[in-house]
Image (tube, rainbow, N blue to C red; front, side, top):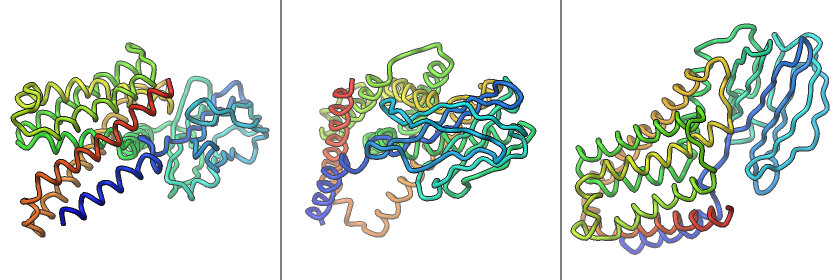
Amino acid sequence: MRRLLLALLMVVTTSLPTLVSAHALDPGYLNLASLDQDRWRVTWRVPDVSGRPMPIAARLPASCSYEPPPPIFDGRAWTSAWVAHCTNGLAGGRIEIAGLERTRTDVLVRYELTPGKTQTHRLTAAETAFTVSGEAGVLEILSSYIGLGVTHILEGIDHLLFVFALLLLIRDRRRLFWAVTAFTLAHSITLVAATLGWLSLPSPPVEALIALSIVFLAYELTLPPEARDPLAQRFPWIVAFAFGLIHGLGFAGALRDIGLPEGDIPLALFAFNIGVELGQLLFIGVLLGIGVAVRRLYPAIRRQATWLMRGSSYAIGSLAAFWVIERIASF
């Protein structure tokens, strides 16, 4: 049993860096900014897949005429921009993302019926098109940005790995509760500050520090409890809060890439943050449920706890160290 688990951990550790990145797929982004009654400036951002644009295409209402230029790679995604002429406007027209049903990502569509009045709609593999409404809806903004928040955290493997390491490191439930609460509060603070422009840091160093925070937790996991950092042992919420500030900057970077509706920035920011928290709580709940189920089905696994902890710490640390090197190399 012990050898099998360790073998599986080694396979996962060596294969994950080549199969996934820390953020599996960024969402697509379609923005239609009104220039006048029948012209819209279109920005189309497509996720990168193995050095090429994801095979999806934005289709505007039938009354629109446009010629999209070839996309340009900006270091993270493929972007193109053009002007579309829509003789009957956008209201009542159909916007579709062709090919989205064959992907695992989603696309946020932001559009203006008139200058300055932004509306949003989130498209997924299950819903690849929608009819443009003439009225902006609060519920639509909430559902779109909550969904984006949940998607971002659940596809952000580095953020989930940090939470997983936190669960392994803190065995006391009361301390775990306060540590997770501190992590949530911290990344909410920097998410708001960075998104609103009060705090600005370049993305590559932030992403490297996020990976380095996971390395720190993984290193602590390799040590016996009496040899671990006293601060992390006695006050884990302080460590979680400090690293949460860094992770919040990563969330803010993703939100800046997606964009916020100009007339409803506080609402969209609130909804995105709620989505991140819901996704985080869902992940923690699933992990705790799996832990309880495994202990009940295989009581003997408690005797392998030390080996499992060490194997998990090396697997987590190896993957995080790979990300640190990869992200520093991209500076």
